[in-house]
Length: 264
Image (cartoon, rainbow, N blue to C red; front, side, top):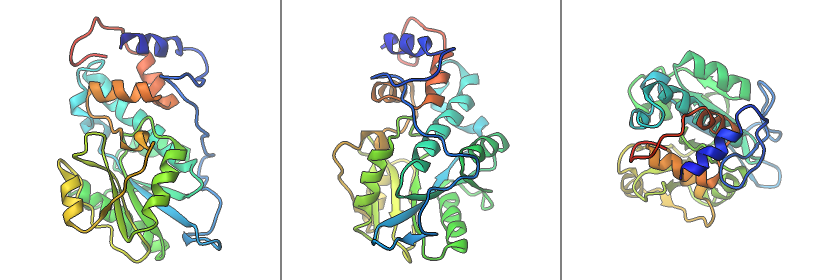
């Protein structure tokens, strides 16, 4: 798969443009921008407008399993790039009212604010699920009728149209979730207006979300919403789908190693 990175390396120094396997463009919202539409909840035509909650660890602690992809120094850079591509694609979705990122990382907060995200400090500081519940509460403190959904921060290949399909399917249920590519974890969990999110992410979260009563949604052609990235193999798969410009730029800056299980 090294030819994928050679293609990515070609992008270094030129404007990112759509290519089949490496980089794709998405519309970047203006700083502080929010998608148009009703303040929260459902619009006049009955369509649901979602507030997404995206959790992000301090960058220095993120993506420990990616240490082999470009060295340990690349881990925080990858984590930020994944989050930037995820947030930018999400904010480009017409069904998304806004994105709240729960993080205490100052660099991530600054960069994601530029894209149009709302930053919610991780006040509980008690792990992933506490952060997600806190983010959902923060959204509903200003918009009690909001439909909320938790979305992983490591979806660098996220496509707006595929996210829209997932959100449309989720709107049919009080709580719904999408399993990750491996069918073990979860990349998306939703709660309709007035319904508690009750996140149970981490490890084998698919089975926990099923036991909690959330409905597993099956959407054809939503690979980019399911492809989270924890390892070098995951990143290869994301590159094959076509990553966003921030991740493509990070991959382009990597050397082209000879191979191995933990190198690209």
